[in-house]
Image (cartoon, rainbow, N blue to C red; front, side, top):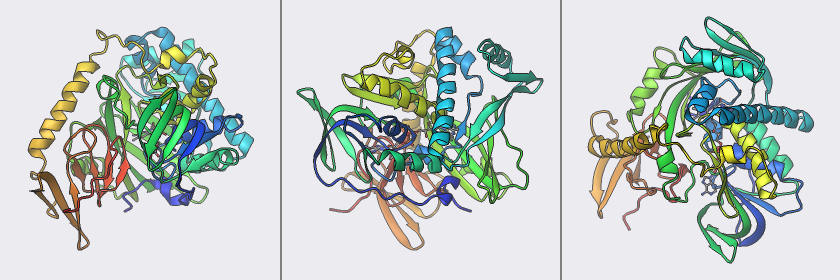
Length: 469
Ligand SMILES: Cc1cc2nc3c(=O)[nH]c(=O)nc-3n(C[C@H](O)[C@H](O)[C@H](O)COP(=O)(O)OP(=O)(O)OC[C@H]3O[C@@H](n4cnc5c(N)ncnc54)[C@H](O)[C@@H]3O)c2cc1C
């Protein structure tokens, strides 16, 4: 069994060069996932100098572990937004998803991208009362959906291979714009209207876009308060039949399924066991719940940012500093929509959707019980993890200890000892060991580190490797 995403098996690792010197640019995009690369592609024909930096290799973040459905049937998303925020916003969200799907389809055809893109039938299975409202809403928007006793169905939805798509887009965009890998930015200062983006090197930029999923910059009363992180588990196996169908349920936890046909073999992907990362910290048990008696060929987990009102955060954070994140597990469409919206904002062009997705939009506290819940569950997760961190469910090959005032752990794997600090450098949460994927995961804000302590994703600016000196 591979404890890694299925998408990594059919693509080669990219090899863009690392930035070794300080440079100036008009626009700097930080992060090379679906958001950053889609935006770079949209900006490929501008006269402005555009640079994208990626801390790792492009596409190896959350995007590489997605189920990558391209779908506007998203559970009971529209009725939820209508209730939490308003009808206009729900309609805007619907149109943003349709716009993004059309854009992906157009790009794939125009650029002749080979990425296993296929039109499929999608279903929402639900017997909840809310499914009636969802159907009514979709019909009011003239969506080509039908309904029966099991739920809603549409035929104008798609699936693809996210990394084949992303890597092709990057190779087109880099003909006119610059991509640097293994290049991180961890500090942003503004001086005389110019951003000084510092990390391995300093990049001076007139405009900056944070496309790094969970931003490393702390904006007071913003992300940790208005969002929580959802973790899900995905298994994949070869199947004989190709039904050309995807589905999602509206139960708790949600089950989501798609197939992947690479022209040689067909796999099914099943996602389940989704939960707020602050609870259900025993990853081994979570994986066991997903797998049951089956023997998957691929098994992995993934985390996405969930916003309190179910709308993404796309837009201006400060003058000439932009952000796109909080996709509520629908980032294939939302990242592409973000690239369309941000292209306009970066060019000072009005966009009718801007206020709906504005990161600093007002959230109605009375309607959004989520606000205090987020703070509480964050705190609870931190405390719970501090108390229970080294109890019964950890494997025998982990030893926890203190040295030089630091909380440390050594994992022994294949005879090699890996010692790391178990405190997340981001905000001090105690990390949990994910025994299946052999990663150290933060149960508060989704930073992840490899067994040797190397940063893999999330807001932490540092690795957690430990040496005595
Ligand atoms: C279980 C699961 C299933 C999902 N399934 C679907 C689905 O079926 N359909 C759908 O539409 N969406 C789905 N999503 C959501 C979607 O995968 C994500 O929302 C989307 O991939 C996020 O893309 P991104 O570019 O914002 O983030 P990422 O892909 O994480 O990209 C961010 C990049 O920024 C880089 N970076 C981070 N910090 C720095 C730094 N300091 N300097 C430089 N670079 C940095 C990272 O290395 C990374 O490559 C799913 C999510 C989950 C959790």
